[in-house]
Image 1 (cartoon, protein in one colour):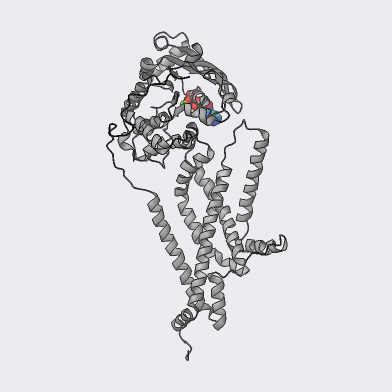
Image 2 (tube, each protein chain N blue to C red; image 1 turned 90 degrees about the vertical axis):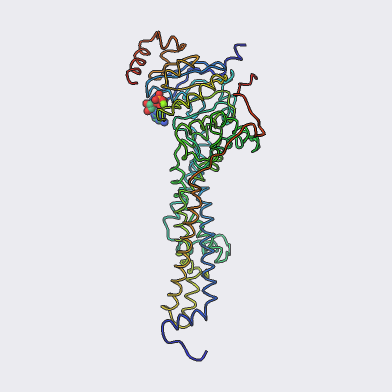
Length: 249
Length: 265
Ligand SMILES: Nc1ncnc2c1ncn2[C@@H]1O[C@H](COP(=O)(O)OP(=O)(O)O)[C@@H](O)[C@H]1O
Ligand SMILES: [Mg+2]
């Protein structure tokens, strides 16, 4: 039963760039349906961590277990694993040569080997959820930041992943567009999607997160429910970060 | 043919009448060499560029790693050698070398195609590598993150954009090739320059003949240049898009509730 619920487990994850150790032994686990928000100062290793989870960065040591199995042992070809762990980037990273619809179709056709019509239907379904179904013929550079990010979410969701990783999905957006993206994320969370979100949107974390992880200098300084983290953090560094954060905003 | 022409223009007219077919044939050969050479060169360039940008994961085995390194070194050597030597010399080496070393008696024309293609390939390899590197790595990452491999990413995402960016250089190469295939006259390829020389030799009218040749070269390069600009414009695609009203009830996939996670395995 417990095995079933635990969808992702990270054990003693370390990452060095050259001689610099950026992640110094990260441990945490994610249950199915959890929304884990990762917060922490800039440069603390949040992006590196989330990129290690789908092996955009190769961990120096440690284990990442998906549904109880070491990913590197189970998946010779990481492509299949990556379709189960979607990723949304701060800079959207849409394919500029493709229309909105093609962006959401290409992965299904090339990686999941779906036929084009089935892929189109799935793409439309998610584009509709993110409110971008009317824009299927637009190219990414014809869209606003918020629209791009919603398409990026639809692109990731079109592969029907089990986990969605989001690295500061609203940080590159003008403030008036943050809301539309957070709304989509909120809906996905409510629908029961497992998500790991690096974010500076503390109100969102407080409202949606099942667990907040505070990372500082490559280690997890504190990990707790949002109530505890935001109201009564046990680590003074968490408190300091949050107060500094509140002043800046 | 009773009176010989006297003025410059009479000569030009006369030579055109006499050798029009020769000029046309020569021009066609030149155009064919340039077009096919540039096309094959582009393919070589893309293949080399794609191979040179294969990411090497730090965890790959040493055998595979040294294999990649070896291939890369060979490709670098190819680029350097063919960029670093004149095409006129390459033509001699390939044409006569293939005969004396490998005992291959290739036709001058075939040697010509070969030399232009390989030469263009060496230049294009660098251009393509630059084109690939100019596409922001975020798109490659996004493709990787949805499970696409290097070749899928290249084919669907990077190359179409790189191709668009390097269209001007491809055009440049084509124009250079139209002109530079003239060096193939040293191995007796009957391109425009070679044909002109033959025609000029008959009446010793070098200026008049090469004036015609000059005009033909210019007409070819100018036409190609304009055509390529038109292609570039076409590739840019429409500047605006039409909204489509999407009614999920009309779609065969029907209306879905928010996705709920399948409670499976
Ligand atoms: N590819 C890389 N090579 C070297 N250093 C890197 C690389 N990527 C990130 N870093 C370094 O790792 C540290 C953590 O970066 P990052 O994970 O992006 O932090 P965060 O997302 O928390 O702001 C930074 O000091 C950054 O300079
Ligand atoms: Mg970051």
